[in-house]
Image 1 (cartoon, rainbow, N blue to C red):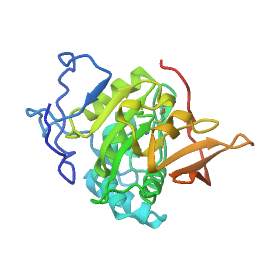
Image 2: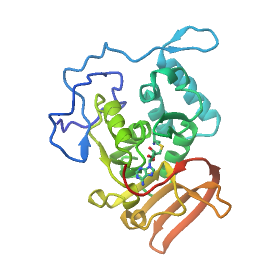
Image 3: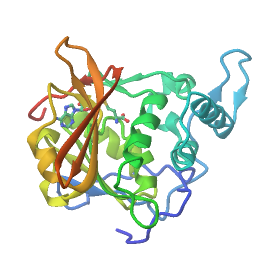
Amino acid sequence: MTKERPSFPLKLDALDNKKSLANRPSSSVVSLSQDKNSNPLKSAPQIVDSASGVGLDSATVREHMVKKLAHQGVADNAVLSAMLNVERHRFVDTALVNQAYEDTSLPIGLGQTISKPNVVARMIELLRQGRCLDARGKLGRVLEIGTGCGYQAAVLSQLASEVYSIERLKGLYERAKENLRPLRVPNLHLLFGDGMLGYAKGAPYSAIIAAAGGENIPEHWLEQLALGGRIVAPVETQSRTQVLLVVDKTENGFEKTYLEAVHFVPLKSGIN
Ligand code: SAH
């Protein structure tokens, strides 16, 4: 496993050796690093413009997505730049590749969805507006609950020193591993487990982000958050709708800010 730091921007074009993980030591934590023999020419499916039917360079489509995000109010250049770098189409099914850069959530299997780009950008921007940036302007250690297909984890890995991402569904954990393994992301650690328990070994976290919403913020997350750290997560309101909740851990206790309505899959306990 390479100890090399990720370059910025990450070389996410250099894909795609699907060599099996079978020879790796069995562990629930997998650090992702690129295989030296990976073949960058074995490219991902082509993006086809739905109006013209013309094949497009995915960078062009991504640029369009990022311009739209900026237009919608995402102002943090670091977030926009990370979203420009990460190839969202590599995280969705081949059949959905043409929708990969639309501002929509998409099915990723097992009844789960990849969040809309706008929501991913918004939540990470909120994290970065807390007190949790280090001297280099990076989020420190980040815990993500709900790896799903691994897209948001890849975006986070560009903006944080370490990312621990937990998924409770084995099928999606495996899928994220497949999606992410060929990329050069040594600061991203995938975990299979119940994210409601957090991941004590990586704590304290300067930021915790959840891609699934429960009735409230689990106690373990509050405990594992560093002083000055921030949680951004969907939570249910009394009227059973979901809103984004920001929790800051301060010297005077936890400060909560309830924001706009969102629609995330439910946060569930246990593994499957
Ligand atoms: N960030 C993801 C979004 C995945 S959807 C992406 O970019 O694709 C949310 C995910 O949260 C689902 O995969 C769901 O299985 C997972 N999830 C729900 N409850 C969880 C829990 N307690 N621990 C870990 N993952 C959980």
